[in-house]
Each structure stands twice: as C-alpha cells, then as structure tokens.
Length: 467
Image (cartoon, rainbow, N blue to C red; front, top):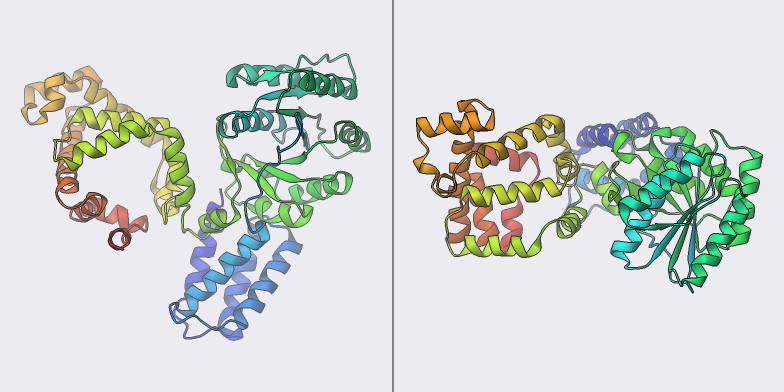
C-alpha cells in the first residue's frame, strides 16, 4: 500500500533538501507536486486542499531546529500533518462493557465485512483474550451466513445459527439473548450490504443499531474504491453514530487515498487496517507508523511486534546464545531460520516496514523470492545430517547427488554453499565482536550485504547500537 504515493512524495521532498531556509518561493513548487501526488493517490479533493494549506502555514511559520536542515524540517512538517490527517494516534477498540459488548459492522457489499468480522473476532480472541460470538444478519445473501460459519470453523470462533427466513432484527435479538445467557464477552454483528447506498439498507442498519445499542459501530470500507470511499463514508456517517473505521484490502491498493480521506470525512478514527487475505492479517491502525511508511521511513515498531507474535522467542534466544558462545553456525541452524521466515508470510510485507524497504520491494518479486526459498530448503533437506553440520566436506560428487535430490542445478548448490560460507563468517563475528553491532559491522564487510543494508536505510544502525 502507498507505493505510488510514497515514491512520488520521496522524490518531491528531495527537491527542497538543499535549501538554506524555508521560504514561500522555495516550497511553492514542492507543495504543488505534493498536491498532485495526493490527488493521484485518490485522496479526496477537500482533504488535499486542507492538507496543503496546513503544511504551508506551518512551514512558513517554523523556525528551523538547529539539529535539522530546512529540507528535513519540511519533511517533518509533512509527516506530522499526515499523522494529524489520519487521526493523530491509534484509537483502541472499546470492548470494556458489561457482557456482551456489541460490535456492529456496516458497509457496502464487497467491502470485506464478513472477512473483517472473522479477522476482528480472531484479534479479540487472541490478543484481548475475550470470548467472541459472531452473527450474520445478511438474509438477502444466504452465502454470507455460510461464509461466516466457514470462517468461524477456521478460526475456532463460535457463530450464531442465523435463520435466513427470519428478519435481520429477529436474528440480531436472538443472538444478543444467546450472548447474554452464555456471558459471551463480545458479540460481532455482520450486517447486509448493497452495491450502492440505498434508503432500505440505511433504515435497516439504523433499526439494528437502535436494537443492539452497540459499543462499537464500525464502517468497513475497501481501500481500493478510492474517491468513492469518501462518498460512501459520508453517507454512513450521516446515517449512523460511527465509532471507527476498518480499512480493508489495503495490500491491493498502491495509492492509499482512502486512508488519508476517510478519517477527515467521517470524523472517526481508522481503528484497523487489513493488509492481506490471510485471516490473521488485521493490524491496529497507527497513524504515525503509516505516515512513516508513506515517506519511506519504515515502520520498525510494527515489524518488531509482528516478529514477537509470529516467531518462536525461546528458539530465537537459544540460537542467539549459541552464537554468543562462538559455536559454529550450521546449515541445520540455517534451515531453522528459513522455517521461522516462512511463518512470517509474504516477504514484501516485512520489507515495507524497514526504513527504505520500499526501494527493496521494487526489486523484490514475491513469487521469485518464495521459489528461491523453496529451492534453498529442498537443497538443505537433500543433504545428510553430517553434510549439514560440516558443509566443507561437500565436494563435486556430493553436490551432484544433492542437486538431483532437490531437483535443481549443481550451480544452485554452489551458490547456496558460497552464500552460507559468508553467513558463517558473519555469525562468527557476531559472537566475537559484541552481538548485533558485530553482526552489522560484519555485514558491511561483504559488499552485497553492505549495499542491501544501505538501500534499506540500515547504515546507521551500528551507531544506534553504540548509544
């Protein structure tokens, strides 16, 4: 997400980097290009006007900090205004209510309400440690009821047995009664959608709101609808007392205009953003982190949180201790690390959270990357235990056998062994020269690794480690 906007803003903001001070003359062209970049990203015109006006006012009234150049100061102002436009800070989900806390999801058909209901249910179950009951009241599309049941089975979340012959109001009332009887913490109601906003849909969702008195009324919007997202958001905000927004399919939209528009239009915070089809991929929306991604600064905090959730911390600690003791890094260790990487999912979703990662993503083909990882795993699995622990014994005859077993060329086996040899050297320095700082310095000693780190904006990390 935001690829096009990020690229254009990064290029545009470089134009002011050499200026001695911020003046109306030297930011005029830059502001015009920022405006164009936002419009091309499908940001609503009213939001673009407000954004550029505020950036100009702040820039011209700013005394440049002694620790920053005028160009850096201007980038900071743009960053801060992006944050304000998207809502200043993350707004937590409100489920602190006498059970059940009701969450009502509303939006157009195809926006991703049913999938979002399951993603939200899993988030509440796993991260908030609360019991959840999901219920579909979409009697116009029986397939939606079955879809929610299927997602419930996949996630281990209970679903209410909705009767498609009943009315949405009757189903909602029955689900609420059941949730109260069983002391369920959170009841999620997935409402019906239409292809366009109509009076009947709005009346129905208003009645459901009055009946359920939800603690959260969430507007679910497809990020790929662009300008239409702002218009639809306004219609729902006028009809319902919304408390928040879920932005879906953000991984499929390189523009990102909806994220910058919908907060301003509805007056309510974006609480979650869906970054993929997998049921686990629902992230709390942090405006400051998203602003950093847009400007190519990465989102290291989200990356760390994701790593903590998805990786085996005990195994990672054991591995780190092994390296600190100076023990040899083997191909078996490497295979373990590959398995941990596979848990993380799509590599591009990790790269975009690294500072400068958008530049690496431009060169990264996820299909090619996944194929390369699969080949690497197959090569190591074709080796004997002795060969994995002592790769130096792998000569010509062994290489041919390993290549045949993995279904690859001998050249790929040679490439893996060469790369692994460089990794072994790095890992030895990790143990000898002070942990992560040693690893970073070791990486810089290898040209290919040094170029990658500089491209990812990691060149200064050694200095950070010394502080």
